[in-house]
Amino acid sequence: MVRQSSPQVVRTRIAPSPTGEDIHIGNLYTALINFAVARKNKGQFIIRIEDTDRTRFVPGAEEKILQSIKAFGLDYDEGPDKEGPYTPYRQSERLEMYKKSASELVAKGHAYYCFCSKERLDMVRAEQQSKKQLPRYDKYCLHEVKNTEERIQRGEKYVIRLNVFPDQQVKFVDVIRGEIVFDSNQIDDQVLLKSDGYPTYHLGVVVDDHAMNITHIIRAEEWITSTPKHVLLYQAFGWEMPIFAHVPILRNPDRSKLSKRKNPVWASWYLEQGFLPEAILNFLALMGWSHPEEKEIFSLDEFISLFDLKDVKPAGPIFDIQKLEWMNGVYIRNHQISNLKSQIIQQDPRLEKLDDDLFDQLLPLAQTRMKKLNEFYELTKYIFEKPQRELSEKEKEITEKLKNKLLTIEQWSNETILITLKQVMEEEGVKMSVLYKVLTGSEHGLPLSDVLAILGKERVLTLLS
Ligand code: GLU
Figure 1 (tube, rainbow, N blue to C red):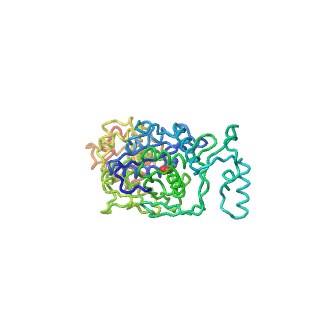
Figure 2: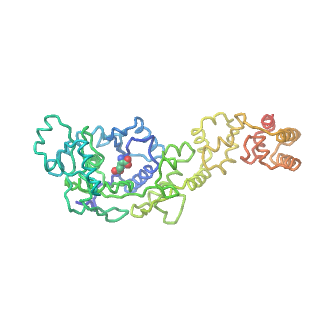
């Protein structure tokens, strides 16, 4: 059965595994798409935690993932910390359902108990490899084991495997990629229920997506090869098939898969670096999709109203951090100054040391230049933290000269300061970068005469002492 024009409410979900530090930026992209499809169709967006792989479980990861999703404003309707009609939303708390479902499949002949030891499985695999055959389970327990009940009673360890029938075409339609066909001879008799009583991803995902009435399975393309197993499971259970869409995997500029080794991958890293959540979502929205008017900057609401899954291009989009920086700069410039101020302080509490009045005067200067929030601290820290400068003899002389000249200014203003700075540069034959250095410890920064005018004579002289 294929879901066609179902009158049902659209329900999408992400199913993150708590196996890393936080949500991967690629999964945040998948979350955005699921969120947009749900909101566009006035449906629901659900978060389910897939924590059945106990060997990879990282304590605290679930909290971090949920925190990040909230920080990006992708509000979910149901989740582990948001009760809904299908609670619990954490797979480790749903084990009974998987056991029941696996037994149902055994009863129907679509699954079977397997008692094979690791040694036997390794041996079978080695033999297949030596014959250059596809490594897969050889159905020994399906055909040869007759005393299943008795062995289970005896407490022998077992797994439950999917019984894949040979010589079938396993098909599904992907909204982004069209029809995809697999040969069932290429599909292994996948373990569904492990000996520790936990389901594998394949059983858990299908049972839960069905139980939670998920209408659209939108996930990354790396799951395409898993989907035929899921299709077989839907068919074996006799359940209605959801709509599938596999969004492209984000790539580094060299086209390799976005991974920890080449690029920061955790969503919270981007926030810590001072990227704005709305800029990141705008940037991610453009991965594999373009605005009908070719606009690059648009709001989340605009994206939701225009987005259609079928317009996503399957070729791997490039995650170009320089473009993200540019886009973030645009967002910073378009931001209301009061919002910007609170976000900057929230992001870097060290800035609480900066005098409030100075903050308000310096921010408009910085706003036009910053690409990331954390640059504000870098641009202003010399004002409230004694700058570390290693000055040469010549630079020390310049410092003295600058101090004396500034001291004599009667009308302290941008113009008079600029004249003085230029005089020193000319007389000493140095560039503005040297003046920056002696004043701030860095060779560039906000427009110097503007900043000095704002700081006032007394503060500036202290900087030079
Ligand atoms: N746990 C999988 C992940 O981490 C979920 C894949 C799916 O959406 O089916 O992405």
